[in-house]
Length: 240
Length: 244
Image 1 (cartoon, rainbow over the protein chains, first blue to last red):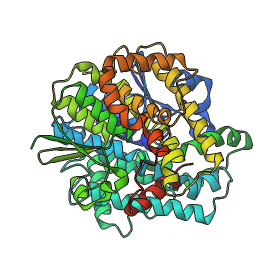
Image 2 (cartoon, rainbow over the protein chains, first blue to last red; image 1 turned 45 degrees about the vertical axis):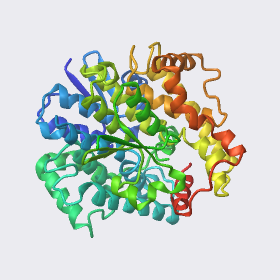
Image 3 (cartoon, rainbow over the protein chains, first blue to last red; image 1 turned 60 degrees about the vertical axis):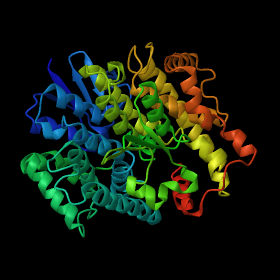
Image 4 (cartoon, chains in turn cyan, red; image 1 turned 120 degrees about the vertical axis):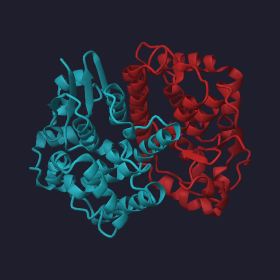
């Protein structure tokens, strides 16, 4: 059995892993795990990841979770072009810096935007107060400003002249609020231009393919009561 | 000017960087930053680190933030033993796997007791008991996962040797201990891990690194903690509002 990737393209980190593997021609078996059906909570999946989260990787006997760990593993094992995670000490540090920063900032705010704007009301049937939504979108806005001012600045990509893992992680995250109908790139020409560059570097077809699911998030059929009960506690913990 | 490390030893990620640099004999100038005197938001510091965060590293013209990035940079640039950040593909992956989980489940969570007990009261904010309990429960869950998924029957978090993961974890777990929440009690496995790690690091280095934070309650009781500078209030209020 070769490389297996357990993914749901609804999830931001899963999209980053998917795009990276496809873009670099890394052969893998896709093992879909449908989050909205609670498949990540199954006993079968717990054998793969006892923490019940996607993405997960299985490479023979070796199982790995956490998207950054998976991306770095694939990056090194399959000898992809240097620009994704450069050998140069300082260039690499810049990518590490972004990957560390984004976890509790952009990633968190994009996740909350999707859930507060779309997934809670549409999928879980739980209304979200306008105040809560407004606060979440305001935080997202502040984070987008930081992304532009502190990372992108006047560069072509987040950490330098070439696309890296940082850009891949960032763009897949930003597509979360886009999928929720937020106009993330409106009024942000710098960020919009960066998005175009990232899409071009990834390949438009692959980019679209990876984002089909999230762009239809607002059409999620409502969860039945049993699924809702199973998912609720973990969702609440996830978006803290 | 050689390597400079901008650190506040009240901060968990700062201590991880400090202890790593010292243990590995990496020569550096310590630039102490006192978060609560507003030094983080001062003009001088924002020239160093435009994200206004500690830890920060300055190596000639090169400025770097984020403890994970700094630790990896130091381990790559200076002659450090391989076990800290092994070149072996799978061993290294395990460290990043830990750090990913740590960012979600440990960072932010284990810092809360210091806020509720010492820092928030400094600006007259008292957190509702509900939040205190919720935080306790979150810490309990995280500690269980730490033991069951990471430590298991290994000597250290990602295998038989000390790595960057162990340092990051230790410094976070010390934070609630410093304000009297002994999360090692009733957890013999975790206690044994801590003892092994501290023995490896050396008691002198541990005392030097942990002295400030472990003294914090005494300082608070003797009213030795200075009132936070007004310019720090917004940062403090924002941080407090983030506590679930």
